[in-house]
Length: 299
Image (cartoon, rainbow, N blue to C red):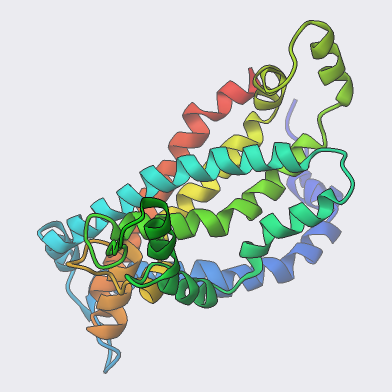
């Protein structure tokens, strides 16, 4: 049989266009605020641009310079260190907190609010406060002196061996409440009957969480892992406020280096190249996670 004429037009007429008209404003807004800047950044990465005049096309020059830039590889290493040490804590500790505050106890909402409080604190306020805590004459060294009965002055933010880990601790502190809420939503969706059945089978205490909670929360655990990994790769505010990338570039991250090149040195083309490389790294991590980890959640 010959295909009917105007069948394509008939299909178009049968489509309900109303939902698409409702989506159109959001798509336009995303296009202006997200997609267009991405396209512009990719274009600028192939140019030499310093905010004066028009961008000059230089081809792959910025990427060639980036490949030979030792400081870029150092800040990339710092960012990977941040990722490796921050993400495990941001995945495990919020889960433990969520289990603790998911109890049917009187006044448990107060504890949930206390744990969530760091999330609503401004990054600037948190950074300045922790900078005081980490000072050589600060609270942390004071309590350490009380425990050891001798004067202790650890250079938390001025020693290249401890600075990045000190900032990681602040990031973990700020993220605990946010990821705790995500886990809490998953915990409250688990039927209590499963725990009662597990108790009859002898699985009680923390063992029931290994048998029931963790397997059922796998999608949430993967979500938290992806979100915390992306946040760790894009870390900037804590570094800018607490250490300015020092000492000796030991806390300088990729985003901080991008900021330096773009707004301090006015090398916007080079900064755009750094941003494109960072985007590709984050995109690759996300794709690998979805491809190799997500299937296990559907098993």
